[in-house]
Length: 589
Image 1 (cartoon, rainbow, N blue to C red):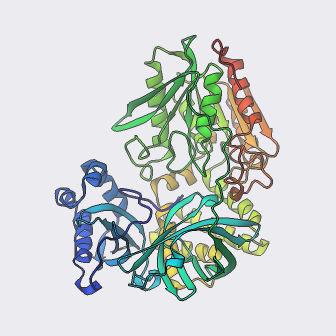
Image 2: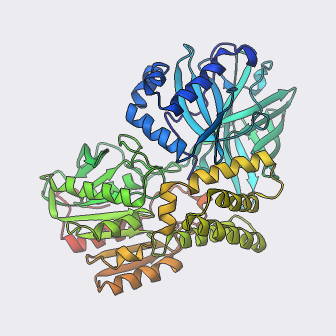
Image 3: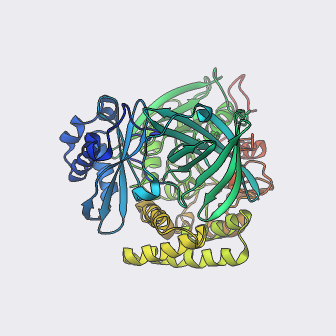
């Protein structure tokens, strides 16, 4: 989970014409005023200050949702003065510090050349001194443009791409770290002196900073984060992104409709694919994992749900895949929703499919991946319209237990020693216990401080530590997280009477099959459900890719999106229960 975003998700945005000195900068005052108006709920005044794109994106309803996320039951104690973070020819980007009775955040306000607000979102608080505000510097043409290379972290070479630009006397830039799904990360504190360069990744815990020297067309030096130091090197050559040979492309040998329907006050948008002949068809709804996911469950260059939907539709099965709340064409907010809300969305999807003449209402099933594997049984326990469910890396124990095992496995895979891992787990246990008990937020924050220090190292500067704790509070204090760590999926599994396929990868470090499958099996047995199948596919990770270690750092570099063995297992199991056959001339692949 990353920091919550509001408004438009902008990569590197900053300013237009040459800005005046900070104390004379009229846009800084406008940024502060905009933040105050927004927090007061003065929507009409806020809207007047936005450009047309922002006015269309931030409706009155959406603005109210963002304001609710920002306040989260807290009281604003003080709004600080805005300061210039970055500048380009097209934009000027400011940070407005907001201090609450519990913690602090920064509002990012982005102005275009006409001094209209072109972007607005919020990020963990950081002091100007730590972030190093934008300052005027002379151009250095040899540093301009695109750079690619890697950071030599333990167990892997972390690919990184950096783009540097200079305008109006200011340097700005962005960085991509594909292996971590990070794209367009804004740079801060860019300093160039002779052959030396320094810059940091904004809003990332541990103040990740590059310090290097340009020599013979390459920048090499030291990358530092939370006191840890690693070598890095950047060059001009561009490395092609890994191929995605399984991703299907039109024309497709089946029908495809863009659809929308309501789930209470929320409008959901998605894609329904179905064979051209042979209606009515059995159908499935794909349910994504945690976080803000689009209808393809796109992550790290992969589109697992697009691949799965294509595979099943070619086999004669209709597939509905939908943008999560607040993503793509769907309304609502992910950060203010829980797995229970997402279950309501799936129930709305089932009701929608029943209105379609192409669909056999008696043969509608659910396929949930990761968190979706929690939601599918929950929906099946509430509706008689669900004919079967498929749990792809679904869980069988409460969320706090899943997180604890996940943290241990990934920490070890990342090179943490046993003593450090034990310390992290002990602090995590205490933090989760406090959250589950609805403890005082100060107690939770103090414990998260200890957890962050254990994870990132004791050498973390105080400002960096506070920034990391603010970010952790945003994530672990959310409605979604509080529901997740308390929820026991076994309760719903004990009420599931329809056929169930439980499919896991043997190298899954995020949802450990050894922890979860026995409990899933036991709960289904307690339900008296004898029609279930449990399959563990050796060598596959959480995404069902063939993997060496199962580490999330491998996800991006693997060309395979979903191993054919997993695709075939799902298709064959469904067809054996719904009796569907591929429409003429289509067949599976």
